[in-house]
Length: 85
Length: 196
Image 1 (tube, each protein chain N blue to C red):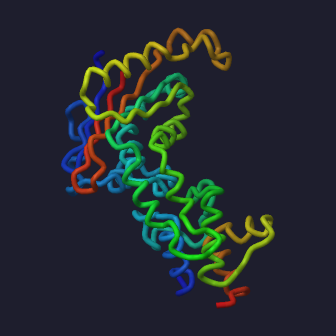
Image 2: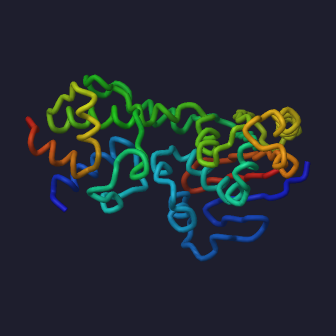
């Protein structure tokens, strides 16, 4: 598990108030929405804010978000390629 | 009204009809610990606020053995004395602390309505009957019992639903899940659920 992946999981837990979870509870490739972590559209908004606030990434295309937020692994890959801070 | 089943959940015990079904778990009990040990198939649990987690866990043991048709025709009546005040306070702490486009937390905002807890139970068990949440000063008053009775007498009957084959209707007894939340303090929470 990379440092970025672990950090991202912790940030997701804090942003979404998943206080009873730890980074170890979230599998890198588990779906964030639907059956995996059970997130919904409200949470997607939180993740968009997280990307902008923590990594300087502003998402403008909603269709893009569906791929980026598929799992922690896909989020981490996108952050590595696009972060500005 | 006499309940057909009762569940009491505190940090010290999880009593289903008087039997502690969490006696093997370390104390003090928490909703998350009981979820992990005895439920564990609903990841959305971790998103909920504390009151919803309490209600979700407590109701699970009364509803999990009902059939899907029985759940469909059930109703939920919830009671506490302070609405969603605990989450309201938590949400207030997220407001206005930075200048980003999202200066408050949508994740906590969702739970700043107390009846969301009833909704979480209804979604989990696919309950289609009425759900309601009453903020009352005394959870054990005759008024509370009157409200439960009113809900039970005002429920849609199975014959009102066209989705169920007529031959199944005779076997369905519409239930009311009454949930009384006495405290949502982490160290001394108390919730009692009744299935009528």
